[in-house]
Amino acid sequence: MLGKFLYMSPEQARHTKIDRRSDLYSVGLCLYELIAGKNPSDDVPPTR
Image (tube, rainbow, N blue to C red; front, side):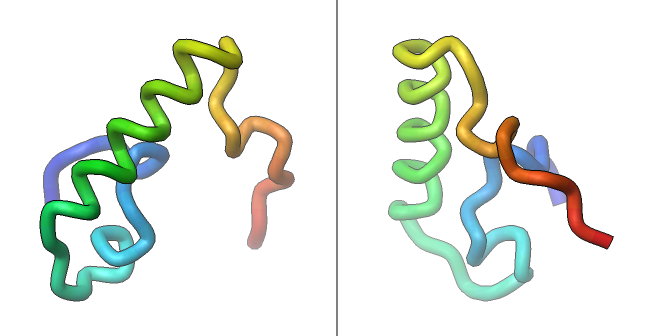
């Protein structure tokens, strides 16, 4: 598997079938970071 875990769509992280929407998810996260200046998952506490 290639890519950074923070930018993977949930389908890709679960190793299920992916399509073009997975790329749009990653682009959306990058766009959010550019606008907000932070990753949306920064405020989420880590799970065990």
